[in-house]
Image (cartoon, rainbow, N blue to C red):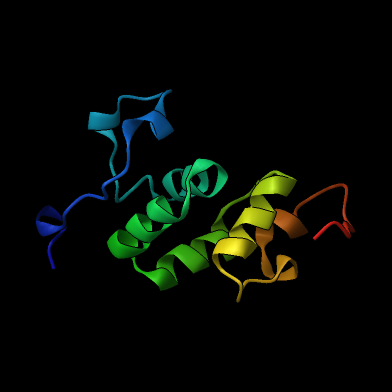
Length: 103
């Protein structure tokens, strides 16, 4: 499927209050988009990004490409994706305050 043919996720612009939602480049900005949805979205928004990017890309992004998530967002990521382990997530391994036993 060509990028031009993809239907954009049905996500409310409020999640991207700090940018012009209409100018989001969903292909190149996938890391900050997925990060924002993990931090602030619910199951509906997670379902939308999975539908758009595919589950594998979303999980790989969470595991390897997100450099920072707050503790609550790491917990949310694991709730949304139970197959993830915090010890596999770059954002957890990159923390200066680990080991953390809160999850």
